[in-house]
Length: 105
Figure 1 (spheres, one colour):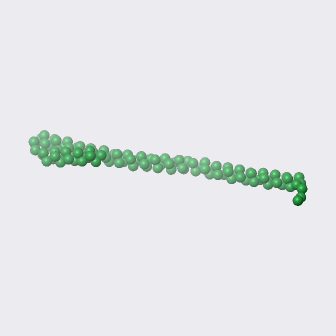
Figure 2: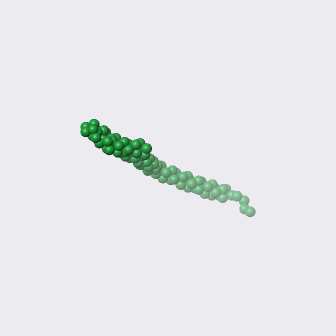
Figure 3: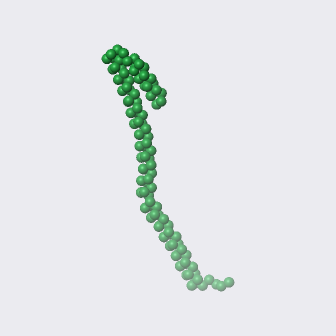
């Protein structure tokens, strides 16, 4: 076995420093890539949450519109009954529509 010479020790230290420098360089490059992708990832998450909220709001608006339509038909039947004293079939139909709407909700 050969003795460790100062040249061998110096070569080892230079190679070790180069390897550590290379690892640090790769680490910094990975950090830069992650930092560059972060705004895009945040925007994608925001878009998904916004789409979910919009879908929920669309369903809610559709339900409200349906309810408003049922109530207006009921009021129309009441006005018609008040005007001519008949239209009990319209009142019965409107009552059933209102009950169906309230049960389905």
